[in-house]
Image (cartoon, rainbow over all chains, first blue to last red; front, side, top):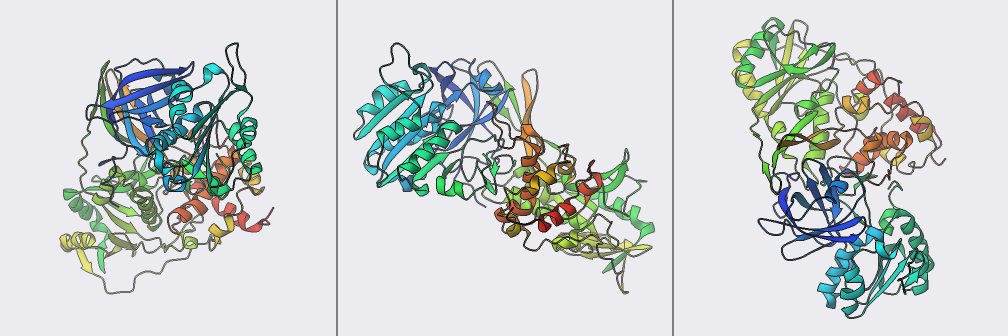
Length: 279
Length: 334
């Protein structure tokens, strides 16, 4: 099969040697890494697609590309394991391997002309942000944008500049932020995302809901969306799995006969309902 | 059909070995496997090898690329990838068929695995049919023929004091033509093989399993499994791999090696979540992958060729043929 129109060249497992040009400390355990290479942007993903990031000799792991500029990719990475632990120690200028893009990305056609409710929790906003920024850049193609986001505490909120400045300036866009537990300076909502979502009560009419967050949040968000009469076809989510190859060969990221790295990571709830619940 | 006197086999292999490395089944440290042929080698041709010849096409460990690390810069280095032609002599029909399964995995669905592809292009298969399948063989249940592997370059049968050879591809015909001096025309009747004594019902198995993901039978089937992974390492169709680094000073190599769905680390994510946390999910994955997921994904392809290696070597006798039988026995909607 021809794969000359992708970025993988002769072997899909070969990374581009890139460089970290900026590191943003989002929260105590999340940093956003801006990555470029000598040839410019290592690859051009669609929103929701993935990139394999490697730090030699530590290892490789798959991350969503949270957004991109003309010459760089951004990965928002939470400190969670061996590789991410070392990534959190590196400095600007560090050489880094990147390969991609992998996965299907968000179904842009499904979103076109519709209102969109984005529901994110914690680091789950990272992939959601790629779609939000795509909508911002192609604003006329989409209806109202309703961004609902929650984190454990005010200091755990990712992408504060987007939440409290950039996205507020976008036409027909609302941003609702909540935290599980406030602090002395927090003036916003306190409470869990699903309850907050029900309070905001977006209409399901001509609307798509896109959600990503910790499994427990997703579970209750789905219940809330069902209560508000969102149909499984109107609900989109993106999954996380351990991955090694990114091209559906190494085996581990399957759910039934689907590979999350290739057929996902984005699925509608209608699609997930047809698959074994093993994720 | 041609015949090759068994007395002339060393000469035949010697001649083939001039232009291509010939791999033959030999016992190494008590385990039969395919290794480079040399004069005097004692070939194991009365039964299939303990370790499948899969590793000639998909090695247990395989270097992908090299790299050099500096403080602020890195460099990816190419590894020599020239692959010489080679011959696999004595590969059994089930193992030939397993390569067709691996072809679907590695060469379709949008991405071609170059490492596998190079070896497939360079490997010539001389397959030996099985006149007397072992008690653990059940390839016939999957619709395979123990006497014939249609995609082998040359098909061979044991005719007593001679081997009978039939070219099935252009490359195979070339080999036959080039060794004409050692071969004679065979006029008689080829030997008749015995059928497999072990049989399982495979027709409709995929459809049978589709609604059985949550079935209680998986608790029962997985109960005695110790997740040792032996079955996956000996399976000619298992292909899952890990990608790892080895580093010495500032130079390193990124390589891949066999991995196994039997191990918890296989799916364990940073942060601690594991979608297949217990052996029940892992054993279910192994069998559903073979009997349901591969056929669903690769247009009816099978994920098991009935070679029986996992039956022979499983330390707790978790017999794949009995698993299939059990999956038919239980009430489907429990």
